[in-house]
Image (tube, rainbow over all chains, first blue to last red; front, side, top):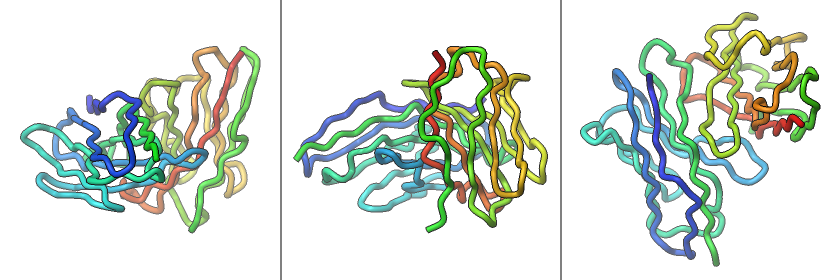
Length: 114
Length: 114
């Protein structure tokens, strides 16, 4: 079945550092890929998405590129802020069959220190 | 911005007791979901619900679980006889259509079974 493997945390960075959180997936067909973020006390919020190979999703300075050849969707940000401290989840949505169901990774806790 | 509201935020229950987790989805949404995350593990799909019936369910969603939309606004998850391993964060979500890009998640209910 479909699965998502995500870099384990926690990750602690200083403000303005470069961030990479690795995510790889296994899926049949052509899934859509997502990054969700959960700030303390809040729900899962969609951060960015990519629906086909070579698409780049971006939002709030975060980027991720859908790499079919390496089955990856790594999250990057050039300069993190304290306000980026949160848990980040990589997820995929199947393109057929269980199209409404999301498959998540285990989440990566990011802490950014001033 | 419309929100999915979950109550309570934290519930402690004794093993063997019944528990009901409550969710108020976004008012014009038609598809409803429950996901759970056991501490340190992946967010897992439990069940989807549409047109007053279950659309899909995972193997986790056994006879101990049930869902209901009792009054047209609430969407509940009932666990009949809780086990220690049911301790987890439970997320409710809703979407307006079958489109997986439109998920709105609640902030979760942390269930602790003692």
